[in-house]
Image (cartoon, rainbow, N blue to C red):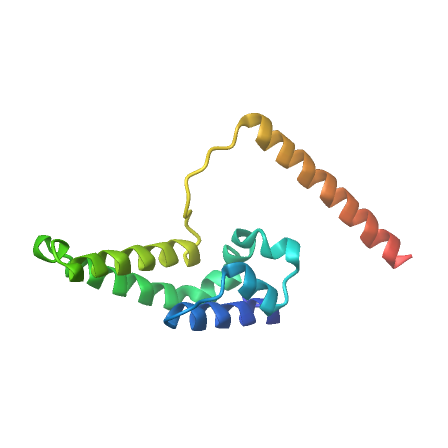
Length: 140
């Protein structure tokens, strides 16, 4: 599956942004720059977990995982007692979080109550009905 132009732009922005040092853009900023709406950029998991985006990020995620494993391998008890060890722990943390995010894995553990789940499902169904109605009205 080939990525859409927006997805391709997002893939490029993600790999460029996460590879650089210094001030980085947020995921929401990168999504907006790639052309996604404000609403879509607030729910990045739907876009990041898309098959085409995951395929486009696969080699970058593998590279992050390799670097994360190297950092973990060199994180010894002796280094933990020194600042260099803290630096390795920080690097490992950042690489792990980026790996989780771009690999489509959860970065947080949250619990949604059954009541909230039903409300979300109902809202989604309502939005889909409204979307289909708008699409039908535009064709007329």
